[in-house]
Length: 167
Image 1 (cartoon, rainbow, N blue to C red):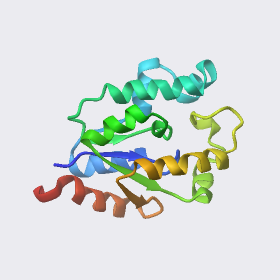
Image 2 (spheres, rainbow, N blue to C red):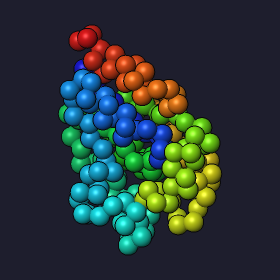
Image 3 (cartoon, rainbow, N blue to C red):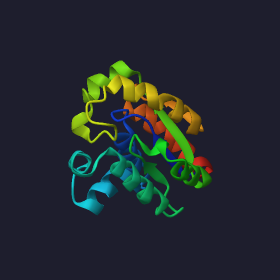
């Protein structure tokens, strides 16, 4: 069985896809944003306001580095790609899949993104965050999927990859 990690912008569908895939194949999906919120008992947005966006990024790095390599489906926060340590670790035991979605679709899905705990300086336009992160997603991606495809289609594509010959 193959192990996978989803990376991509907020609103690209990492969490939705992880949950849907988990439901289809019966393998737990770990969502690092949820783990951060549980650990600190705050939403990402509250954490960002209280402690700053860099704290959120460091918290995610800590969560990722403490995942065991038995994790099969991992949905990361959009800023995971800022940590070389995190990405090297995830790449060592999972296939890193970039869920690519055009900026105009991201903007439709999340607006400015600031209400979602986007780990970027307060007031940074979503366009700037997108342009800054694109090269990092592409750098770390071992494969890329079109996040504008219907969720069922993406789940089926990835289920074949995760289950491999067991299907």
